[in-house]
Image 1 (cartoon, helix red, strand yellow):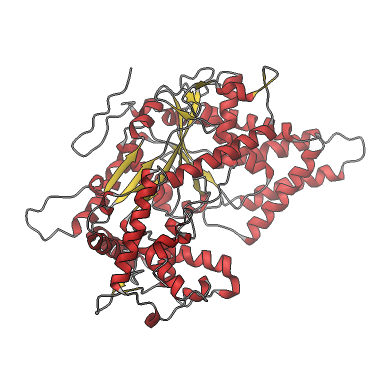
Image 2: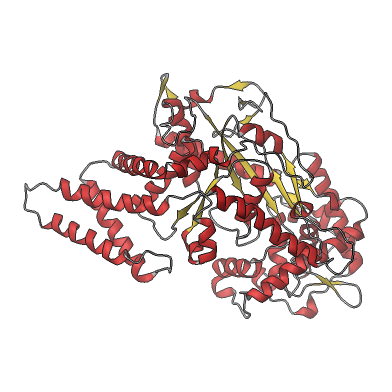
Length: 576
């Protein structure tokens, strides 16, 4: 029986599971210690299975100790436990004892003890907690705070209607299909990643769609902020410490993800791994956690999930991958992000001559400008897929390119037997990553700000064709001016090409890109990088187009890279 997809007056869907304590993530938290105990044992088993010989464990322990001591000395964080040094000193003493044993004396007990202690510490650190009470509060306070910003622009207008967060955020794509699939199996959202606002925004989107809360990995550094840590530690976030690169930690982290998926907890992975520094949609994905979804699916065909948390699970439960594309006119951290990108790629060719880190006052002032400009956001849900990249229907059935049903368990078999083949599964994960990337570009929605930023930067690129990127971003202000009529005509040609691409299913376009081109250009210039004090695009007193910050113009221009539009002479042949 299909779900009802009714929405209330604020555009919020009915909850698929009305009682928060019945949500998979809530049951996981209710059975947290039992889950951690099982997690420790499965992590140890996974690590030992991956060793070529049992004697390798001693080397793995020694390397983990070495890397952890370097981390503690060279990269300490405020959020680190106070007993870090004493814990690893204790591990050091145990490994020294092992090295001092005489030939023939058993090492196993000390090895096992150190192994158990390290995995237990990592497991307790990683594991999240979910509080229905904190969730209810967060889903009230976030829209409330955003609504305050939304109403700043009209606060002095007597009788003006109050705006809500839902008024500014448009949902497109396969929304109702995602809701249906959440009742048929486990959903993994794989969003693009541009801003630190992405996580709370997606959390609010999940709430609006009436879906149970999703489990997600949050960088441990985010817990340095006590207010942020208070909520994150109560909303199901499991901690990810990117400083820890040793085998023991990475396998423990991946085992946590795999086990929670098997327990039916919907999850959120940022497959790019971190925010896009350049402003471009991801070109490559980090496949580590994504691979745990494929492993969990294979294991679901091998045996019924352990059902540690009491969630009703059964043999063959499906896992669905849903790409999510976030479309902003402006990214608060764009200045620092593009600076990091240019310094990383240009090294000595690029240097910063300004402070790129806004104060809290500047950030709040910028956000007020953003809402006053009536900038919209568009959240696009891509085509749901199985873990092999095949599209699925509302029943969760996998389909081939001709629309015929596929039994994907066959892809995990060798000689009619389900087999754990790491090399095969790594290739499947790589292919899944390619399917996600294709969805990112297909469901990317062009906003007016993307149109004008791409046009302006490409015009200047051709005008100063002898300059590389690092020379162009340092172009003097007097050389940045673009003739208004040339700009309008080029924007119009670019829009025509984009409309053809939309008809071919290669990209999406916002409704604001229809109609009079001069109105669209005005809207784009007003909204592009509206957070920032120095604007990527603005108009001169003569009515021409110029940029107050070329690095920001580059950042917002990059959103339309990946389609080879910059090579299209139909658009830019008349701009040199």
